[in-house]
Length: 389
Ligand code: RFL
Image (cartoon, rainbow, N blue to C red; front, side, top):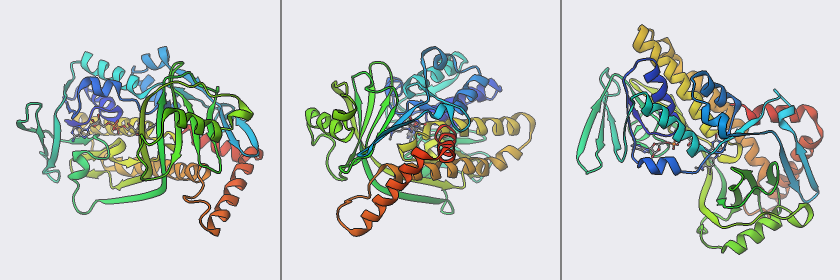
């Protein structure tokens, strides 16, 4: 088995294949230290924790992760909290930085004797329509190499080789929410004991705890403006305004260790299987980060794929592989639907003051927020979708 990419999807898959006695190799474009330090997700769903627990891979999560079940919405009319851990299915998130999860999964994989080729970029998948597909790659010293196996798993993200190798029949659904975020990683403790979503006429601002020393902030950002256009002082001042800090308490400031721009776009590839090539994680679908679903879907899909491959390779039962794409797409579309709803809730339409239509949108948004504040049924729906995948 050849697995492309050592993110959450590829590393979980690699672990589960080795545990089932299936030989595999992971090709990873980046270095080991890069993947062990790449800060991304932080909010992991209970489903993710259960999958890791079931496979004996949750030790780090339980030792160092924390639990979280409250979010706070702030608007010009005030603020309200939803204890989502007590609503819906009564489940809470785990807060555990993605780079720690990747480090744990990599450690377990190597302990089991797994092979990863770092600094090795997959270029293309060949002969996926046959029973002996192969992957052409570039080795760290620039030499070309070729890897063949019975199956190839494309877990190499949105810009990976698996996506580039899809046959013409593959459909790529793409949607642009028309919103850009400046994502910030602040070396500062969290400023509130909840996920903070602030809706302001100047745009959205978000607050998410990562560790006691590090906090993520997001600012809705004018598309096309460079990430470094504003000084740290100006960004903190803007966060203060949009998060209504004078009304609800100051933000703990600190230097920004990272800034990046994210266009809130989403994509789904259909189907997720092309002969002997299977897509999982961001390679299969991309979600706007508004609802924190991407890493959780990556883990879920890797678990489903591992079970299907184990059936095919150890028992000659290919039914799991046949069902893989449909099973995952059901989860993906549900996550896309909720993420789209969250995205519309949190953002004024771009250039909100430009036309009368956007006032209509603002009215709908106020009504959505009011419903979420007052309707128990709406809160239960929110909680179930917010925590689930
Ligand atoms: P990854 O993690 O991108 O890993 C893919 C790996 O493939 C390698 N690669 C290649 N290797 C070989 N050959 C090639 N040609 C290659 N091309 C790429 C890459 O170096 C990399 O190591 O994909 P995977 O495993 O599918 O995991 C997906 C998640 O990383 C992603 O969905 C999440 O980070 C999304 N996300 C969040 N998800 C959550 O569930 N909860 C969150 O709280 C959350 N917060 C976030 C997020 C994503 C963010 N960004 C990046 C927009 C916050 C942010 C800011």
